[in-house]
Image (cartoon, rainbow, N blue to C red; front, side, top):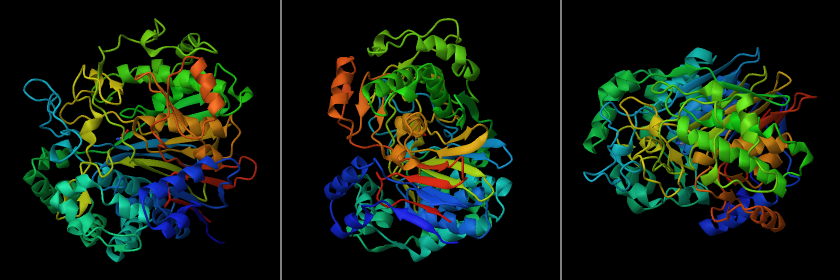
Length: 586
Ligand code: GLY
């Protein structure tokens, strides 16, 4: 058996250039724009795909040592906490979707929680104005982290090898270090890290920035990982909890020993939907991912996408109209299910989607401001308002399939790049700024205009609404795709783009991952396009009344696996938008 692995084709080029962001962006654009004809990585027995090649290798080695998909996913996630500090984490949260080879599926939810001292208006000043940066940067933006509890729970409940074995690769990466590429070295120069002395010291050597090719070691993180391997509970109830709270409270964080002690992982039933011959298994609340994905697909089932050319104007138009409607429902109904009744069954019902689809005109955009939800299907929505939610591009996703056919889709996040930018000094890891995923102030539209309602208001112990969408797809009951991506509010449309291209669009999984994305989120009423959509198609979309926005460059990072239905071969699509990721299989 041999290992197959492929880096993004432009990794070497960017390494040689050893230089600027601009050069990297150019290479990335070239690679992504050349998406047609790109082939997936193939393997027979097991496959791991993630945003960092060292993390994918860690997961692959665990598979080869006899670990199952959960062992491998947990190993990959811990390794990402070391080699991809921009999003991989111990101080954040996430979701692990598992489907076992015997057909059972479960969703392990380890989303962060608001501290017990949090209040609905904690990010507003005395006049009710939003305090700039308060929910996105620094100690008060931190929510109680769930990743350590979630990964330890997954390993204990569904893994075979035990925590010590699966953390070992991460410990080695942290203590031995790893050579940084130009892009990674550049990421560590982020100016907001310098605002916090521990972060400046750890990631920026107090101003003597790392350069391409230098080895980045994290001895404090290695020690913390060793302690977690020995006793993960210590992070929430023991000495580590004490140290973490001591570190964070110095800077004014609201997190206390009680917050950590009361943190709990929840196993939830995934959202299950049907789309033509496919069964969609995806993320339930507190993620909006599964509901929005399934409701958009339900609407799209009324149109024959397979007869349209992938990335043609009709293709983009119909999918956009489905996104618009599903995101309108997201805005008004979704939040933490432990705090609100979410009308899930109603939102993903086929009858409701059929009624929604009737308002879609085949050659005309529906202005969001005039959109009317079909009556008689949903309970009354809470009164809606804008929120200061940011796009958070630096979540990260990994997909794993093992030799038995167990599959894991795991998405984890610090929210923003480097989260709150606060490092727990004695423990050597970054903390999230997940508090910004709540509604900071009703009635105030944000710069991105992603709308949410009171269902997602801040409350003590509540989980903020997420868009993370780890998804597993069956075809005729058999495992067919493992999907997911980062991208903030664009995660759901990224997963939908990839799934629809791989099915109705007849692209292979690599092409589907690389193809230019499009996104609509109801408000603002704009159709966002990545570079690479044909200019004639853009003109046709404008003629239909769509307002195009081409200014955001590339977004998201799909790390996905397809299973060939005839041969059972594993086919991986690693996103060429990232230069240091890889698929690793055997
Ligand atoms: N913080 C990104 C998400 O949960 O959607």
